[in-house]
Image (cartoon, rainbow, N blue to C red):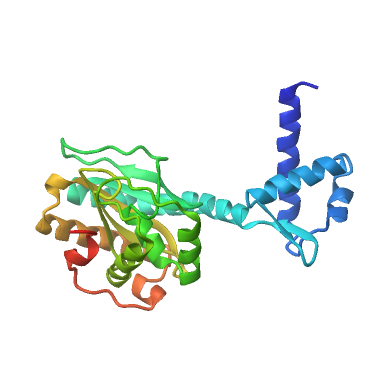
Length: 278
């Protein structure tokens, strides 16, 4: 058997295991798994399940001795669903936002511990920075990412900071968890986030959240502009429009507004609270 055939067989087995577990919400024991896959040697099954569990695609309960679909697989499935439901619904709204502002508009979703841009509308200004669809970004130093952090519960935020290495991307990047937590208070208050040269020098990102029916953040709408166009009046104009656009998409999806979904009221914009280290 060639190496390619062996790899193909391994991949086929992984998908077969995931399909089986997706139909068994209560989970399956190792013996039950072997009964379903008599052609897989026990040692191979052990290795497959161990590797899948290490990536979060399979969960093993030590108490019940049962295997079930893991959080990583659920998260992946959720990202795929959001990609194919949020994107077509949001497209006319981000196109309208691009027409009104002339700036680059991006639609992003959460994928694992990063965000990924799944759609964009190119701006009309001659000076702009083009970010390809599919680009991944960190949470802590981007406007949309900070929105997602602001929507997290305390235990989720604690877990994020414990496992994430906060690398300084620019001189303005916040790498102190305490400072980021304090900054997130303003993000929660305004339902809006700004990354002012925190991820890239010379670039400002302004983001507003799209929420689903449960009040969770399903996506984010982002406007990206160079710092040369980031005066206070321009920021006011863009922020109001990006927030309005995100709210329209939220309503189109039947989602909850930010204040109701997060138990807080939005306030009049005060840029010194939203721009880190200004």
